[in-house]
Image (tube, rainbow, N blue to C red; front, side, top):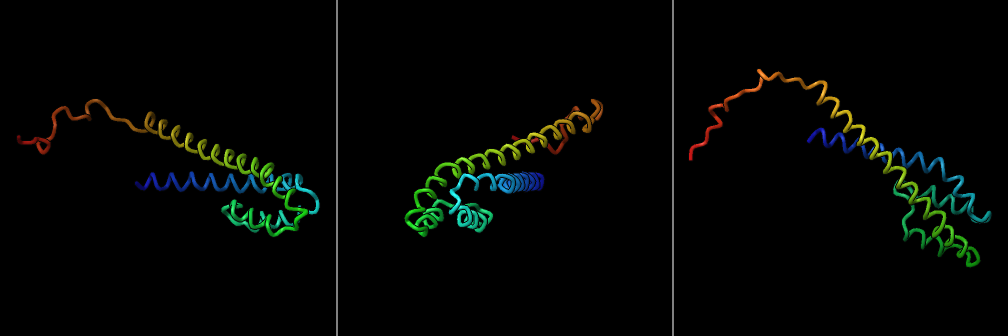
Length: 135
């Protein structure tokens, strides 16, 4: 159980770090797809969203708080480029997590093949007396 808990925490850390790095690297180019008058408010909204990202209800509230002439452009951004960005981020971070999991599997196989050594003479041929079950 300890190994599983440690493995899961490492994979979650790999996922979260990959997602954060991807977002940091790609948000500036994402904001380049926003009309100039909306870059600052949308950029602030995304930065202030916290570690869980922007949620659909928060997007609706944000768009509703914009002036009427900017709502359409903001909605198009969140339905188009931002939606694609969120999918790309998820795919990138998941891929890194699965790659880390695959490396754990390779390490486990290598340890099993090259480290665990039992000679045939060390394997008991008779079951221990405690294993006998009365019927």
